[in-house]
Image 1 (cartoon, rainbow, N blue to C red):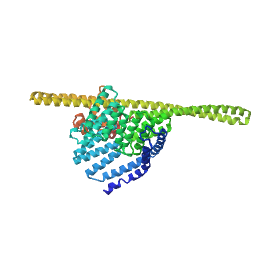
Image 2: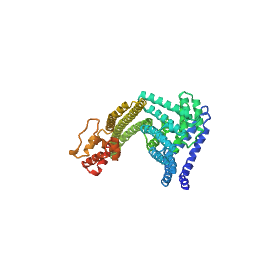
Image 3: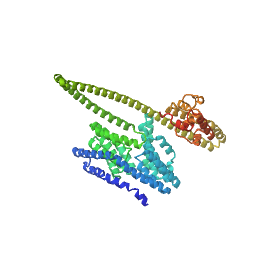
Image 4: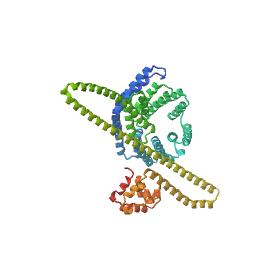
Length: 572
């Protein structure tokens, strides 16, 4: 027990260093006029200026804050490694997951899986369900909807306890909300919105009144209806259940910003946006939206140095957090950079005017220097140096233009890659839906035949299922081949280049793969175990092993690194 307590020692420094920021946030809450709508605008502006300075300091200290956060995590990880109790491991893994929750998504998922493993060893159904709900939430928050759906299918809501059932419906409603937001198809958007409403109705039927989830939903309903005063009252009740330094506090202040902004109270909206952003930065919350909206406001106000500094921090934070960067976040970064470039061009134009004036003055000096023959040589040397400088600047400008063109080409490739990924996700989702519908149909049909004692028809249906299974399996292979070759269109050519010329494979029909190519396609995707590959392709272990051995022996280069070279296909 003493070891666990000692692991929280690094937190003391964090608390002491954040105490001043915490007090500034509290003071700002009292300094802001009571209803934030009848107070002196100068008072609000002064408080906002003070909060901007606090945010500047927090962003400047972000690296130190992150290091202290890591110290706390490392202390818990040490304790986790030193215990063999599954119960203690579960508790510590949950603590580490919460510290990674808004910090690093890959590590949050890792410790959620460790929590799930510990819960399974404990055979605690409620903890297992809790971990799966947490996994589903983390997947949705980071944009991995396919993984979220797979996890959702593993959960039976009828067996959940009250707390896990609330978390389950809350997460699913949020998933449909995000799917509706990101889909480009209007029909799908309407369908996802209907599913979201259904899930929220189920959620509210089991959620206690005035709970955080209930208040969150009510403020959303009030805001959409234009009832901003009622929305603010719901947010006030929510705020009473949290405090600065908590993740919920940043969410409350962000919703307050949206509400005041919709009311047209820009200074008050900025005040709450600053509170939300400061809370995110000081609590190492890297899955944040507030700072991007703050950058937009600063950009529009012409505070480009601050906006650029915040965008740099926000981009670094998003990179550390991982997941899929939001489209609006990327647009904000590009927008601020564009505005900064425009400002820089304005300064350059001013410098050009100054340079012209200086050049005119130089002409006058040169005319005077004609009279002074002793100065003639020095002036000529100066002119030669000036010409060389101009040539250097011209070359630098040319290189800069080439760099800009290269960046445009890179952005185009990134956009095409995103389109491919979105298509693959949609195909995967449709394929899963098709298989679920097929299973439901077979189950329904079997049930009807059993009830009707039509055993001969049932027997016929079972005999015909093998052909349907083979057709379904071939359809799965076709879908896999199509998606894989969409991502790696040159896979067959690059694979053949790894083989000796006399052993190269004839290229199959466009959009398809042969069985050996499919085996090495799975190896390219990270599957190394022959048993797992044989299960995925419905092959014998010996068949997979023989193919791998045969092509390794036919390698054009070093046989021991053949499969490593396969894993690198498409990375150049």
